[in-house]
Amino acid sequence: LKVCIGGGAGFIGSHIAKQLMAEGCYVVCADWKDNEFMKPEEFCNEFMKLDLRILENCLKATEGCQHVYNLAADMGGMGFIVSNQAVLLYNNTMISFNMLEAARQNNAKRFFYSSTACVYNEALQMDPENPGLTEDMAWPARPQDTYGLEKPGLPDLRTLMAWRSCMPRKCAWPTQGLPYQDSDGTLSQRLRPERNLEGWAREGPRSDGKQTRSFMFIDDCVEGSIRMLLSDCAVPLNLGTDEMIDMNHFARLAMSFEGKDLPIKNIPGPEGVRGRNSDNTMIKEKLGWAPSISLHDGIKATHAWIKEQIMAEAAAGHSTENFSSSEVVVQVTDTLDELRK
Image 1 (cartoon, rainbow, N blue to C red):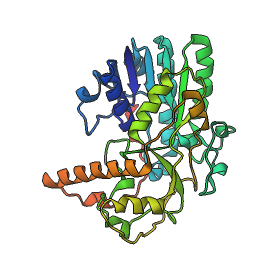
Image 2: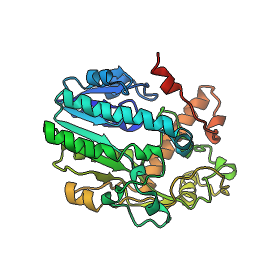
Image 3: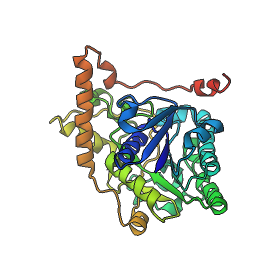
């Protein structure tokens, strides 16, 4: 079985690729960046460094592939999203449409589209005690930002294309994932300090820290994505946990693995919605499965991994100061400028 993974050098994409390769699939990964932590041969059979905003590149990547996973997206943390809304809307629309069209032209049998929890109506996420977002709440659309605005139309487009080409479509609306790694492969600002944990004392969660989220460990994300693609389910599903936590308690949980109880200083900045949680009723009905790894266990594993990376950096003589600070994000158009070359 030949499989293409758009965004295959990214965190989720590379882990799905690694699992599929272990299961005996021939895995082609396409991305415009390299994976920082794994060599290509560790997670795929073939790596193509391509700009998936261009249809010809998508056709090349998906050629001969029976299954296509599209996880490619230009995104980052809230600071990056709110500073680059027009750029993200353009880049992600081009990627999504071109990957789908390439899969159709190359007669792919199954197509997996990774959407985002950001598709959900902002008005339904004002309460930190969010009871859980069900799949039908994504429409009518009123996402908070353009990153979420680009996503809702693809399931409908895929429905029309599937009807005409007999290509089953699978769509996931995932909540946040763990371990945390930004789209460029760098250690995430969200889990910096151990992440030098003392950093929480001077630079903690944004706003008042009472905004809530649910987080999914990468192993659950990989299993859920593959299960969904192989299933007969033809409707979008939430892929995330329903274990919600606010950011102040999240910080204390992270500190607990070092036995520390430092004061938390909340800082101003974009916080996203006030409350977001996954309702897993439908995924249990359709797949007979739901993510099960607890937040405690996921954070514990993530903490150990990040600590190991920081210690390795220090042992190599590199400065680790930047792991305990954040940077102001501004709009950048370099990705758009590249299209002119």
